[in-house]
Image 1 (cartoon, rainbow, N blue to C red):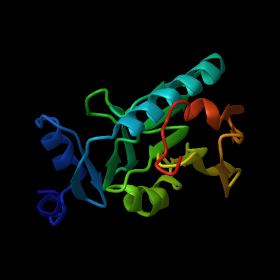
Image 2 (cartoon, helix red, strand yellow):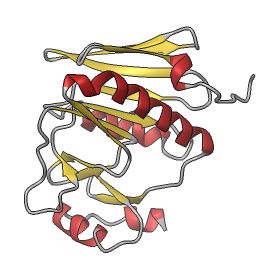
Image 3 (cartoon, one colour):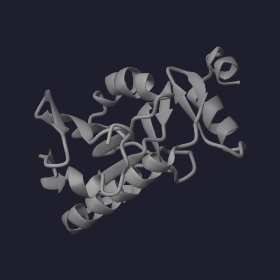
Length: 193
């Protein structure tokens, strides 16, 4: 089914109208529709822990944390995604003439890597996310080991850094916050452990 949907090119307007009538969520990437897949126990737990950690550190700074139900307009004509976590600092800018569910100005995006989506998250989405004018950070969060890959913007330059191990702390420069990986991965069981 996923391959069949992704074979056809569709416009953003067609996708938005079609998806609003579906019982499940779908993403539009490069004008191709992809179904959202289910998430593992670890994926859900890490998402919850990270959401709580971000909210507790950023809400006082005027930021809000949204879960995977917040659609993001990455490219107006061809890409709309549902990141695992979205942080918005400041007032939301929503896509005109759509439901109140498509954010145009995310500040931070987080994707928790899964075997079925890792390549898309790591390459296709990353290339497009880093062109969002409002975006200050894109983070790839492993679920099989304590590892977060950070792409953060400083003026017009993007910087890459890995935070690995339970003793490490994720540093987000803007808005400034630090989260120990031991807090994010608490009680997650890794296969190698």
